[in-house]
Length: 145
Image (tube, rainbow, N blue to C red; front, side, top):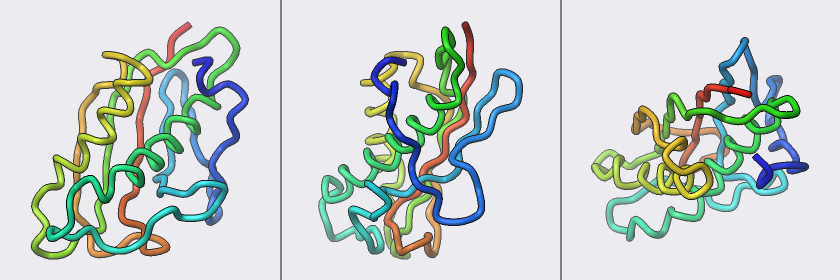
């Protein structure tokens, strides 16, 4: 996981840790698209706007989650498999392209981890998210030596 070596964990916005580990499974907290603790985009995801409007925010959120997971690895370990990926979307009532938006997260994980980065996925529309973030992403990953 050298691409994430020495990368700092995202800054928690409450009383929690960025990731937890039990044996060989890592669970991340839900990560919003924050860079240096500041949201890079806010607001509801709208059907009227191009899906590309949200690409950078999705990629930032999943990068934060992957960084948090990678920082749980001991020397010599690696992320063996992304087991689960959940994308929460702060969507307007009429929004229906949840899966297309989630594809940006899957694409990012595939770029960074190859086939290891593709696992089960859920894209869930929600009424609101912390800080009015457009997306929040959580990863579950398996670890091996």
